[in-house]
Amino acid sequence: MTIILVSLGGFLGSILRFYISIKFNKNLIGTWIANITGSIFLAVLFRLHLTNILADWTWIFLGVGFSGAFTTFSTFGNETLQLVLDKKYLKAITYVLCSLSVSFLFVYFILYEI
Picture (tube, rainbow, N blue to C red):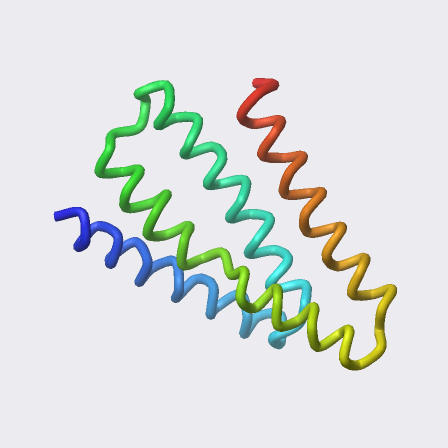
């Protein structure tokens, strides 16, 4: 049953990720939005799961499956590398720092400050 839940969640997460990519013309902002919102969503789910508010099957479906497919580290890495290869160093550094810092700040706040 776990594999089915992960698969169904991943199916939906990947479709939404693809939709966002199309809406933002496969631009960096689409990846950034998916990764930031995915990180926030995953942190909320994780907190709910840790406090036994979220059932195991829901965590597996939404946390592991959906969020795992929705966020995309490979695209983030590829886009960053492309910026470096295009000698857009400042943009690459800004993209990486902004992506990581915003994600970490939101996740920290959700997990430890609420």
